[in-house]
Amino acid sequence: MPSREAIDGLGAQLAAGAQQLRRTRVPGGGGNTATRDHDHLVLTVPESQQRLWSPWLTIDIAPSDAGTRLFARFSPHPSVWTGFAFGYLTTSVGLVLSLIFAGAKAMVGGDPWPFAISAAAVLVLAAMWSAARLGQRLAQAQMSALRDELERAVAACRTGRDG
Image (cartoon, rainbow, N blue to C red; front, top):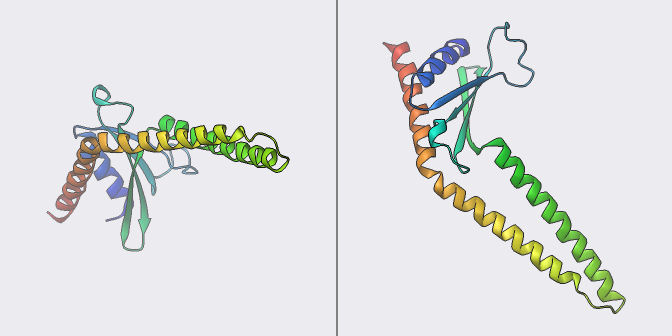
């Protein structure tokens, strides 16, 4: 179906569902009065059920040669994603700097105590990775609910068009 039809139908189906829908413009998508050939939807669990690990299902709708392309991706809340990215970056830079400093100390014959900082940075990175994996496991039920809601809405749009 044409992308405008898909955007309207899918948006209406998702808004009527049990999950929370946010509709935003894709970057560079024009003003709010422009026609919507591309759209960006965010489906989340209701606020009363949201936790730190709750997923977001980002849905991009765009025209394609065959009609409409729908691309959906699970991700954490943007502030959680940013926090993890900043944590990984900061800890990785600290790890590299401590390894350089420890190597220099070892080459001049000093006590390579910065290796302890390197070990601590590796432990922090491992803890962050473990926390991310735990969050993914905790979010499985909510991810399934979001996916089921999207599949229901897509099926309803297809049957509404075919019927």
